[in-house]
Image (cartoon, rainbow, N blue to C red):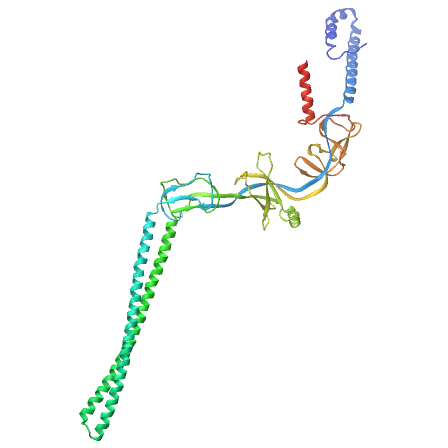
Length: 472
C-alpha cells in the first residue's frame, strides 16, 4: 500500500467523509471507534515515512557556498579614527580706518591669493591729511634753512668781534707804551702832569675797549649757539613732519585692503556703499587657508607608546583621510603634530595631520575617516572578513576540505584592514574557506562551490541562463 502525501490524501479523505454515514449504518456502534483509530494511525505513519525520506534527501543535497583562499601578504599596521578638517590658518579681515566702502573686488567663496585687492574705502580725507603733512614739512624745511643762515651770520659776528679784540689789544698795548713813556718824562720834569695823565687815560680807555670787545666775542659765540639750537629745533620739526607724513601714508594705505594670505573667502558681511567702522567687532570677510590643510583626530592613550615607537623608527607617518560617501582613493598626508598633554576626561591625545589638499577634497569643518599607518607587517595570512564567524568556543571559519565537505576550524584573528582580516593562528596559505552561506552549514556538510556575485564566472553563468531562457 502506497502512503499518500498531504496533497494526495485530500481526495480520499473527502471520499471517506462522504462514506461515513453508510459505514455508520453498517458497522456496529461498539466497533466504529476502532475503525477511526486505525485510519488515524495509518495517516500518521504515511506522513512520518514521507518526512523521513525527504530529510534524507535534504541531508545528502550539497549546500551552495562562496569560498576564497587564505592568502599571505604584507599588511599595514594602522590605526583608525574619526577626524575633523581644520583650516591651516584663518584670518578675519577688518578695516583699520572708517569710511564708505567704495569697492569690493571678489566674489563670496572665491579663492584669493596673498596680495589680491579685496576692498576700497573712501580715501579723500586721508589724502588731504597727507597733503597737509607734506605742507608742514615744507614750511619746517624753510625754517631749517633760515636757522642755518642765522648760524652763519652769528659766526660772522663772532669773527668780527674777535678781529675787533685783536685790533683793540694792539691799540691798548700802544697806549700803555705811550703812557709809560710820558710818565717817565713827567718824572724828569720834561712835560706837565696834565699831559702824562692824558696818555694814561687813553691807555686805560683802550684796555676797557679790549674788555668790551672780548665780551662782544662771548655774546657773538652765544648767538651762534642759539642759532645752532634753532637749526636743531627746525630739523626736529621736519622729522616730526616726516613721521606725520609716514603715518598719513599708512592711514591712506588702509583704505585699500589686500588679502593677507592665500585661501578661500567666506560670507561677505558688508556690501559696497555701506559705512565701515574702524576695527569693528564683525570682520568684513574671513579667509581660510586650505592649501595645505589640517585634519585633527584623537587616539587612545594606550596607543601612545606604539605611536612613539613607530615615529622614532619611521620618521614621518603616513595618514590617509577618506571624506564621507566617497569610495575613491583616500587623500594622503603626514602626521605633523602630537599634543603635549592627554585629555584627562576622554583618555585620548590629540593629533594633527597636514594634507596638501591639491584637489580640494577636504573642506574645513568636515568629518572624515582617518587611517594612521604606523608600519608594515610582512607574511601575514589574511582572509575576507565575512568568513570570520563567532561561536560559543570563540571565532572560527568553515574550511572546505578536498572531499567538498566543511570543517569548523578555530582561528585567532588580528587586525582588520579594509575587507580583510589577519589570521594569527589556525590557517595556512591557500586553504579554502567559506565566505558566504555559513548559516546553512554544519561540520561535515557537503558543499557546492558557487561563484561570487559580481565575478566573471557569475556573469558568464547569468548570460548562459538568459540565453537558455531566450532559446526556450
